[in-house]
Image (cartoon, rainbow, N blue to C red):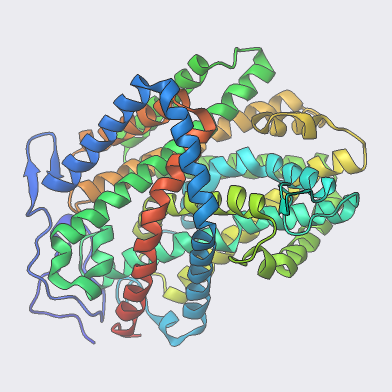
Length: 546
C-alpha cells in the first residue's frame, strides 16, 4: 500500500522522519503534544508526566522515611510474585521467542522499517555497539562469574527434599558430585538467562515501536503499539495508563541495575584500594555515576550515548580478549561450542513453565530475570527502535536476537568458564566462597595484571550504567513528553537524577532484595501489556507493503 499523500504523519513535525517509499500510514487526527503543558524549560504530557513523577517521588519519600519497615515488605512482595507467578513470566517469555522466530521465517520478515526504500541510519558496528551496551552491560559484569559459580555449587550439592518439597537451589535435576556435569548444567542455565529469551523480550518492544512510528506515522510512545486494538481511544486514558506503566517499569528497572552496579563497584574498590564498602559509599557511587550520566545526557544522543557505547564496547572487548588470552584459552574456545550445545539440549526443560521440581531456581532466578528484562524492555526497546530505522524485520530480528545471544555465550564461557576451571582443575575455592559482588574480582585476582583488569572491570560497570541511564532518561522523557523526541534537555536531566535518587533509596531501604522486588513488581503489569502488544505487531505487519 502506498504512503497516504493526503495525511501528514503525526510525528513528522517532531523529527521522526516520514516513511521513505511505500508504507501504510495510520489516519489519525492526533497531533503530538496536543495534551502537553509547554513552558520555556519543559514540555510535558500533563497526565502521564504528573502522575508518574508524583508517584515516584512519593515512593522515594516513604521508602527513606520508613527504612526499617519497608524491607520486609519488599521481601514479601518479591517472594510472593516470583513464587506464585513464575509460570506466567516463564510462559510469556516463551511466547516472545516463538513470535520472533515465526516472524523471521514468515513473509512478514520482508517488511522494512521506515518504508520500502528506507536506508539504515547507522553502520552495523555502531548499531551493535549501541543496542548491546544499552541492553545488559551491568548484568554481564555482575553475573558473568557469580551466576555460573552459584549454579555450579548448587548443582554439585544435589537435591534436598523436606516434607516432600525440594529446598535446594539447583537447576533442573542437579548433578550431585559430578563436577563436569555440574559445570555443563551451570553454564546451560546461565546462558538460558542471557540468551534468546531476554533478547526476544527487547526485540518485541523495539519492533513494535519502530513499526508504528516509522511506518505508521504514530508518536514514538508505547501507547502507539495498541492503535490497531484501541483505535482513537489510545490517545485517552487507556493510553495514559499504558505509558505510565512503561515509565514505572523503565525507571525501576534502571534503578535496579544502578543499585547492583553500585554494589559491585563498591566491592571492587574495597578489594583494590581498601575503600570502605558501606551504604554511604554505595550512595556516593550512585551519586557520582548519576552525575556522569547527567553530563552524557547534556551531550546528546550522537555525542553522548553513541561515543560512550562504542568506547565501552572496545573496553569490554579488550577485557574479554584478555581473559581469553591469559586464561584457559583452549578450554574457552571448546567450551563455547559445548556450552552452546548444553544450552540447546536443556532449553526445553529450562523454559518449561509448569510442573517444575526446581522451584527455587525457576522462581528465584528465572522468574526474577524475566521480570527484570521486561521492566527494561520499554527503555531498551525504544532505544533500539530509534537506531534501527531502515532495517528489514528479518534483518532486525536476526541481529537483535542472535548476535547479542552469541556474544553472551562467549562472555559467560570466558568469565564463568575461567572461574569454574580455577575450581575444578586447580582446586581454588576463593570464587566459590566470595560474595556475589566480589566473585569477578576474586577470579581476576588469579590471573596476571589483576589490579589493572579489576580496575577496568569497575570502569566498565560505571560506563555501562552511564550509557543505560542516558538512554533510559531519553526514553522516559519521550514517553512523558507525549511522544516528542526533541523535548527540552532539563526534562531528561530530571529523569536522570530521579533514577539515581530511586536507586539510592532502594539500596538504603532494603538493598538487593528491594531492588529485585521493584523490578518484579513493575515487570508484572508490563508483561500483560507486551502480550497484548504481540497481537498488534502481527496486525500492523500484515498491513505493510513488502
